[in-house]
Length: 270
Image (cartoon, rainbow, N blue to C red; front, side, top):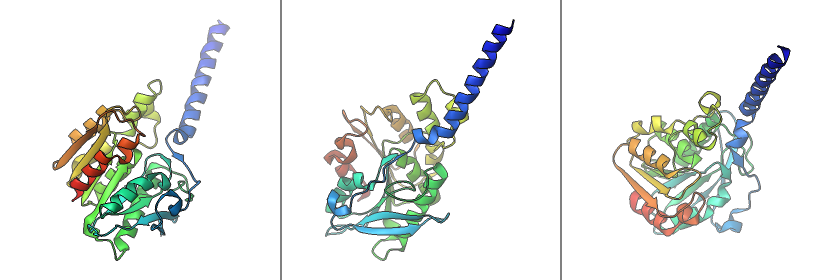
């Protein structure tokens, strides 16, 4: 009789320990910050301005402001990154948008690009608010013509900000419905609906946004499945547009800053 009891107890201990480890370490499976940030000129942005701003919880964050080339379009794009890397990896996007007359603010969250702090859903929301406040404070930025651009995880950050402060337009590259759904797809053996701390419920927020929405997705994306982006698009209000990039995976250049994507963004924002 003792052996079955011991097996049950051992199994229970394993489950408890495993659950505790998952609970404590889950953010390391969501956020992959890179602090090794090169200077702007080293990534093709010699005209970028290194700027700083403070969050509501007292963090001092750095970002890059990339001015538009003439003729300027009187629009500024706030770029909210995905869950990996730093703003230097988004330099080609900013350089191409500058060619078309758009200024950009390349935002790095807390913990990314040498910034202090540790990333979390609440923290990233604070970072986004601080970035917007900074952009609005610049004399060379028209507050009524600020566009939010979110990439992957950054789409959830952009959507949450847009639900509070409406942008002139909202561009979402590889968006997903919620982090819970993403967790179910990538970790089907885990009860993510019970364990997940950072939930990013974009599908519950997108319906409250009245700004024009452009969704861009690659039909070969294995990180954010194509149907996730379609579902998020379907939940959005009009006016909206969907661009499917054929054969593009999550980190492919065609989806990140390919000519089809840049053309769609420029036409939509204009």
